[in-house]
Length: 141
Image (cartoon, rainbow, N blue to C red; front, side, top):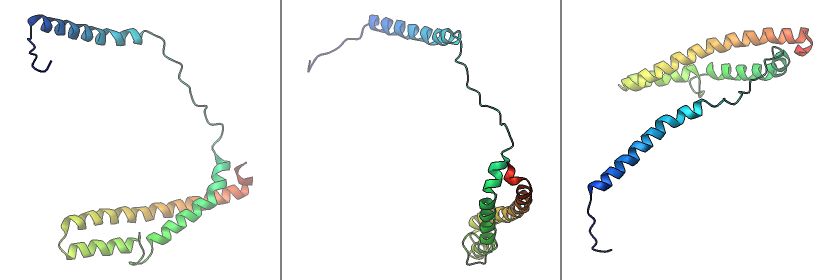
């Protein structure tokens, strides 16, 4: 078979065209055959039976500590990693060195962090209200 030559014939092309046509027909008609079968019943989740007050009351103290740690970090000085002051310092340094793109990125991150402070302060107030509710309602039971 080392020096064998193969001749292409028009018969081979006809066979290839017929196979291609048959494949196309099967591809088009096969999905419609499967679509006629009845679909498997979907499992539906049960609706909630309560508002989750017991779980919220259980996690309230951990959530309060988490929010407080985040606020302490954000309110830290320029030497505190993750603080607003540190991000402000980095943005100022980038602008001083003429790195406009970096300065813009850091300004956007700074705006996000400032918004995060406001959000976390509101969440802290909400958690205090939740703690008061939980203590007066037997832990949400």
